[in-house]
Image 1 (tube, one colour):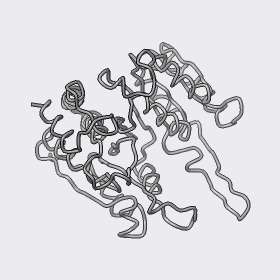
Image 2 (cartoon, one colour; image 1 turned 90 degrees about the vertical axis):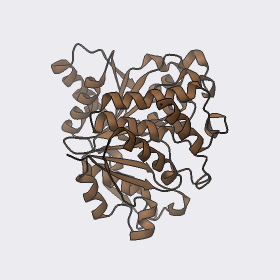
Image 3 (cartoon, one colour; image 1 turned 60 degrees about the vertical axis):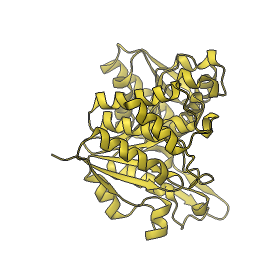
Image 4 (tube, one colour; image 1 turned 90 degrees about the horizontal axis):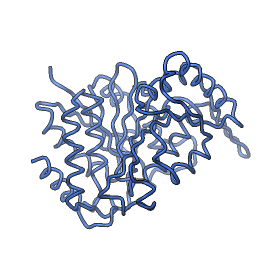
Length: 343
């Protein structure tokens, strides 16, 4: 049976970093069928909306979805009636039932000096942010008048329990549940549900609760204290981007968004970087590492995923540095270095 992957180049540097990632995917998966669709700002330009019904249907019927990047100042607007590229992301997550966003953060020794934090602080960091992806304030009812605006934050017991279970199942040493239970009612429910699930099914795994402001501080002062961080949608969005800087560049972090039985969505954490689009200098490594997560979580090809991750590590060990990492390597040169490491 053939494997079908839908690719979404998106905007900015998206097409530049996706093309070599697809070449790598074809190297690991013989006969994989690639089906490309416009998405985000490019879809707004072509169709007037960020995610068309045809694109969503194609993604729903695929084995996995590989997304590069969306957005840019061209489509920035505060007019609620106008389409925005990010609406495509929210619609895709909802349409595919992707409730768990996994963002691994593992600074590589070769890049320790690229991090804004001291070597001794980040040394040994190996954590996973598990972010709830389809609930909370991003999806709540929104109102807007000339003088007021509101965004409703809603969570159900079911939504909290399923993301907490994902975190406990991924944990090696402990789970840190991040909330704002001293202020928010949704966070109080969050904490209660996480505690109940822990007591029923995962009491053998240590659990701690940390308020989100303290978690933000601990991420940059003591990142090695974390194993798995589980949190709600908006907190996870902010904390995972903060954690990205432990690696020295947001251009290094991959992510996987998973749900039930349907296809997963795999994408780098970074944005579309329109300021460098078309120059051939974008860092493709997070895109490559997202492809590795697709191999692992989307196609159950663990050895192939490990081989690709090892090739990225080896290329960096041998001196590969793109501009965001303080070097001069182009997108093509970074790709060549990873291919050489694969042998």
